[in-house]
Image 1 (cartoon, rainbow, N blue to C red):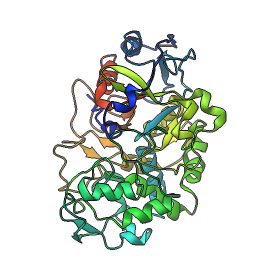
Image 2 (cartoon, rainbow, N blue to C red):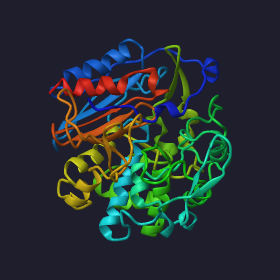
Image 3 (cartoon, rainbow, N blue to C red):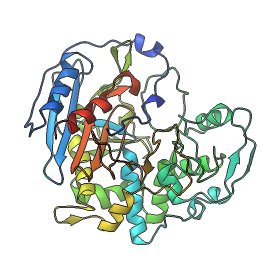
Length: 426
């Protein structure tokens, strides 16, 4: 089965904040053409009927066929508006495969090389250092090799993250505002209050002053690599990261509902993100006061996008089409195949990580061993901090994505349940 464990544990600490917030029950069911996906629809309906979540959307398709959009419930507990294929979801780390594939385009263009030093674009990374003991101090020693574009894509360069760093290194990530993405305009216990850098380039400069957690190419460690990659893309392409995505991906693919900052005119489509404490839902990011409407937000390629299920399915359709949708090709077939392949260098340890025994490509996990009851070899995808999940399975001929909004990830087994419902429908 496609493993849905990703970075959802990152954002919520204690229940203190949510105990003070109220949620008013209320929802309505909405359905579309099921196209043979009865078990998927039944799952979505059950989550709403049992009041686990107010609204869910699934998008499932065979090969490059049009997707069947299945949905149940409403945008929020206190909303009467039904969710649909154009509702807006915080996809968080499902941004990573998009950023990874954007970099693959620049590799195809000859403006990046997979094993090129990040220091060629962000000079602070020219001579990376590796921390000796992050719990005690920031003392560090020179790294044995450069940090490369491949390392940023695959979390194999030893970079830290505000959700994986500890001790003194974590304190520095917080002090420098190196967050993985916005959560709420309200204070969240367990999360340090940070002020993000004013630009993606400043993010890159600040993180380059910190030591790595591990030597490059020694172990897989979830990191801010895709955020840094966004800064590299800006320099290599000569345009703002979000402008590059719009010109080369979103525009050509007809993705009209994908933003780092949700326009005020579109907030009525935005779902509410919930914290789950003791099985109860508490709103942490309602559209009326959403952190994703803050115009000061920088375009974090590792976790900053808000998208509609329809838009994300267009991205998956491009991957299933090996770089094209219909007659529109955004990258060569060989480029798409390479990006969805295992790009980890030999010797990178993956034990006891989100990708144990698996590979990693341009921002997404790669299945290396066939699961008779689930995903096939070559399945590529990832999930997000608020429970969303998406993948393309070339062996089974499936592309699928599920949309929910809750934290922490372990509060509900949606990813696992959704994957099972898809594969048992075949």
